[in-house]
Length: 431
Ligand code: EPZ
Image (cartoon, rainbow, N blue to C red; front, side):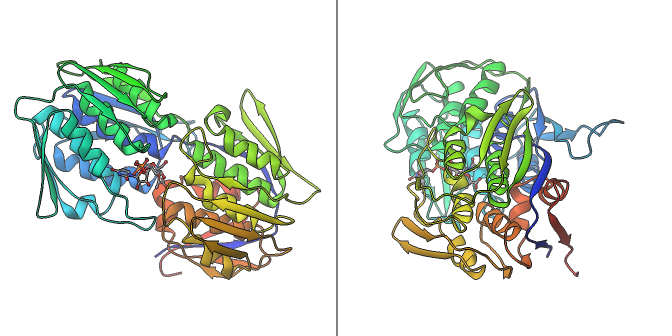
């Protein structure tokens, strides 16, 4: 199993190009099941989750190809995928595939909408909480499907097709909103969604569905209206830049000090995180190439944050921001409101010398003058990258184990950081 070795203490200087968003690429790839024509997705990140989803989709009958690199192309650049579900060959998503990647549960909506039936394994719990799918099933029922749970599988049927309906989410859910968008696009009649997720990845999926012929109004806002159509067609879409990757590197620069241009980073997509990074003492400038983040001289100021659905502070940046606060001059409070168990990084940050006390959904962080390198590991990708951020500012060597978590969601992490002066290397399995 690969590990990443980091020797802390260097500032970051240079340019990091921001990849396409993993959390938009995955539902966009799943949307290819809605049509028998080709969906082309540009700017798809080279991360392990994308590779795994390609395998899962091919199980359902999706043929895919990946564009080769042309002379002169940046070897780090994201890639273009062509996905064609001319024929759905299997409406069942088996346990061993869904267990590998939770988001693959979302195939239930396009399979049901296009084929009138889907059998998808329940995903079960994961490292950041219990993560139920009750609201996704509610969506399918509101659109006229019969849903039964049989031997660990969700069996959804709508033999005469889905019907438009009214869907009110009691809690904001990204996956629930993706499910509603995909299913309602092929349902008969009108669907009204209220308290929808406003995350940029939801708006990106809706933008692609509209190119495919869907009639959607209001995506990116809490109220969405959809007029179902009989069939969707192929389209060409470029995946929105990854606000979580951009936020992660912005926090890394705030942690180490230095001056980095985050190329193609979209400031309006993570303004709340940028505000917190500024309050912590970094300078943030928006240029026409992206966002420039700088910190020099003065130390890190403590900042309280609380995670919330978009446009609030993203849960997917909570662990990284906590890493930054471990070196702040004073105390900060970090409140996690989205997932009940997303503090698995606390114990590992403590191994680097951080002082953090947990009290329910609040972490109290007492900044320390110095962190010290140590061997660490984490149980999910955002927690893993928070350890990388802490390691970049720690004295001595940190070995981050279980690097496959990082590979699931960060494209060329060690190369991007290495080009900015960090001492970071991947040590392969037997190394
Ligand atoms: C998406 O997960 C992201 N995953 C997560 O990114 C992200 O943390 C999360 O949205 C919140 O922004 C992908 O896009 C692939 P939710 P999702 O449904 O859709 C509860 C990462 O690190 N809920 O918005 O699964 C749920 O338990 C990850 O990249 C129900 O109660 O999240 C949570 O408390 C991890 N019932 C809240 O809603 C349901 O049926 C929000 O979850 C569904 C969700």
